[in-house]
Image (cartoon, rainbow, N blue to C red; front, side, top):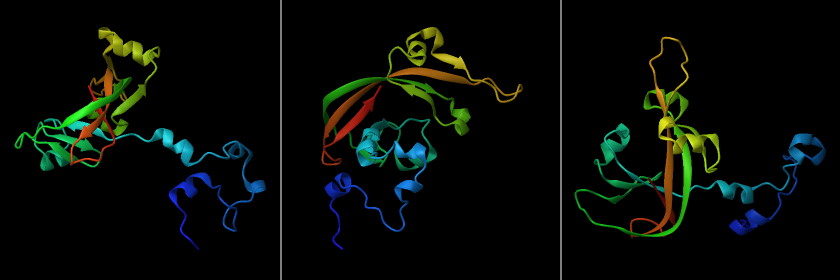
Length: 176
């Protein structure tokens, strides 16, 4: 059997075989999703991000990099080091704003991001734009729990192409 190319995998429908369910075995709620596949998944691909290593970074990052190093996440490629001070250049190709509610570091079990949206009219966006609601008390699990605060932040995200041999010439995100 010949190996399928990437394009064939994207465009060719899956052939029903012995191990796959026949159409009458598929539950009704799943039948409406027919045709969803790699084309649908493509809308969720996130480009790599640039990260400045900070003192509050994880021990894993601080053991590998110095404070103020610029790395590409998630693959942790070193792009700029304070030691070498070799500059890198980039070209801005796009921009988008995003509104994020960040959980406090002490609430790691909840995950870092509580909520995010790009809708400038959403309740979260309104909190991010009002300095009186940039910080809000996190609901307590138990009455004697310590007060922790959620940070509501507007991020300015630039889509850039980095001109460097250290990374692939593909879109990267720089977030402020």
